[in-house]
Image 1: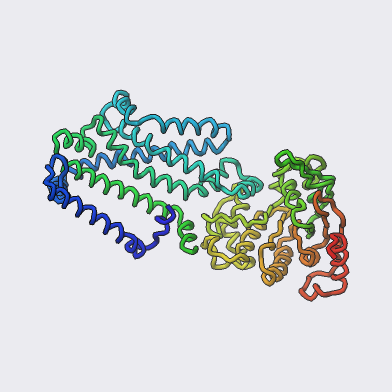
Image 2: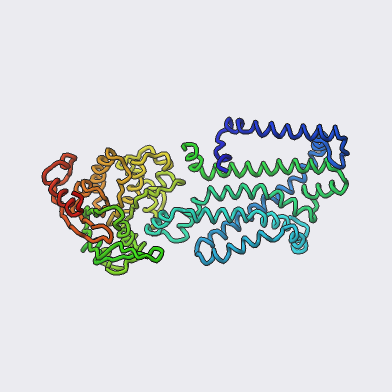
Length: 264
Length: 251
């Protein structure tokens, strides 16, 4: 994680990107060569060049579907952050609350989302809500865990000092605990951000009118694997977009943090 | 009436079942506007004593009176500066120094302009919008002291505020600290393990023994003010130093 954060300016980023781009290119070349040499049928595995063609042709449709998926992912992520903030603040108020809630959080992650997601369709219908719930369920855990750990890591001397100054418990949370938790909060948010699109797609698989999940289900059923891969490609792009936005927000929210890293 | 009056304060900690007696019947007081130092070997319980004054630790025995009362919230009488500067890395210098002053819910803009006027005295002019990580050690200490002074409480509790500084910066900071004290006329209760520093700054010095700490010497320092660096080699200064060294048995 620290390596990613240390990637400071664009020059630095470019230097780091080359090896990854090279490997990616080599991977696609091997794929293309394999498909051509072994004459693999397109409904088993399409060649990257064919996927690219399909991607170009289907772009307007893919963009329309991505819009619903992106909306679900971002709404779900925002809901997850909201829930995480409230839970973390509650858990910080009293150790008793933390000991009560924390195990439940862990248990909530052991429930297989894929098996309870159909229930959300029954409860919340075919609209956007069940997808948002799935995304929020997938995303809130890394956010809340990182937030709680971050708040715990706040300097107790600083907390004591503020208590002596006369600040209330709640003010101490706002002034010390939340700011100290920001770096780890954003680390968790980045994980959640990459999960969010996946959560939205899973939600759409189970029943929706639009979205990349619907597009993929239809394509799979029709053995149009080139379309499936085109959808996967755009899912990757959307996930990276969300990641980049979170990284940007982190830089806006914690200029001091990135300053310190540069000074190190 | 004393600003701070501690009588017969005793504290024992239990660490993993082992009893550790830290303070044993300590009686000290600080009068209005006075500069009082507390000196003792490292780890003798000086910081515990400050925590007791602040209400962060409760004594097993003894009385703690602030302004003659035993139930006033410590924060209303004292302003505490712990050993670590505890500046918040996510706040600018200006927002850090107003923190204590704002505890009562004062308006931000008003406190900020109050702080801006004092920046020159604390040598922080031009660094208002810097983050603490961009400051030198001496500047961080000055910012922390500014936060403490700006709280405008009757007593400043300073826990080895100059301890982390190099000798040259330290001597300069001592002179400057006296200037600040002169400016605001708050009483100062100062913890140090530097004998010269204690004598140079104070009206009175309390010397503590090793753990469990007791007051083994109470020494009034009647050297004239303002004090200059030349005082450090004055015979009257050296006589006081000898007395403290004798009490600490470090000869």
